[in-house]
Image 1 (cartoon, rainbow, N blue to C red):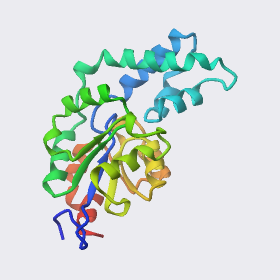
Image 2 (image 1 turned 45 degrees about the vertical axis):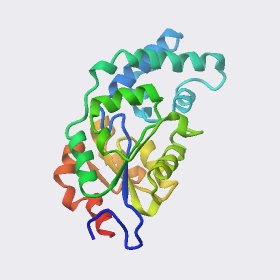
Image 3 (image 1 turned 90 degrees about the vertical axis):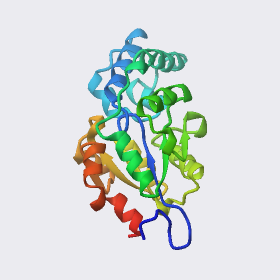
Image 4 (image 1 turned 180 degrees about the vertical axis):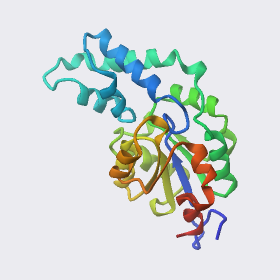
Length: 233
């Protein structure tokens, strides 16, 4: 049964994380955060920042700065990161095979939802770079979730926006936070190392399969968890 529907007529679908998964932006975010912290007098190594990319801004700042800090700075650090990252919007590029994978999923009959917790303006820039709006069922942004990753809110919002049940959907993401938040909803995750997180770390978090990038997943589509989802396995 390869039409993207269950036997009861419920749709099947895929929830795509965007940053690092479909858009090659993880290291741009790392540099933007590094500059943002430095502007406020915090010396935070890029290696520590990179491992937390994909986590919500508030949680990321909490993880990287001392608990007894002056928290009045937190909002301005987050704002600085956003401004610094915006410099790169015009030059954003999809990861290898990203647009083709999104279209392959849609052509197979899967509901396709972009599950991003970035703000709407950033998501708009990434959607323009990806160029697949014509095959998307829905897109989520930060305003759709009360809490950001590793909380599961953004994937819960994506399921609702796509008219999907957790048992009929799968997540594709590049960060351990994607895997952790998806698991809270009973969603399996296909991990991609395109964001710079290792296969071992993604599997340790619970990813059911790991590929180098969207192109590698596309090349293995017929043998991947996406095909098994279509088949109802």
